[in-house]
Image 1 (tube, one colour):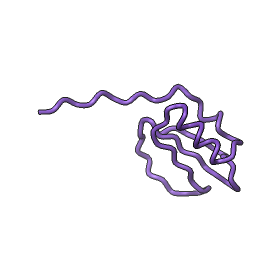
Image 2 (image 1 turned 90 degrees about the vertical axis):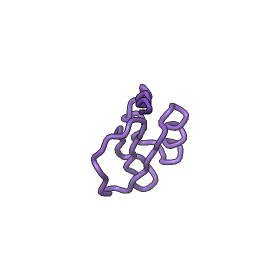
Image 3 (image 1 turned 120 degrees about the vertical axis):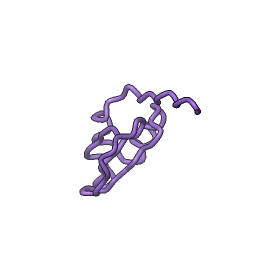
Image 4 (image 1 turned 30 degrees about the horizontal axis):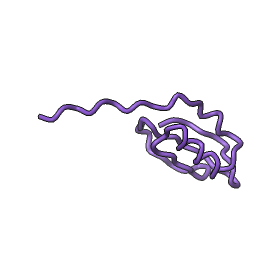
Length: 71
């Protein structure tokens, strides 16, 4: 049986730091800081509740990040 892979580490970064940035700059900054998946979403989008290490979600309204959260 193959060994389980080591869990991925999450960047030590605050999602609140992205609120107010334009979506493109926020995504670029998140990738530079080590987030492996960056998911911009329109307000009210229905998303699954599974937690994924290394994923940063952005709610984007009128081109600006209005909310950001891990997982």
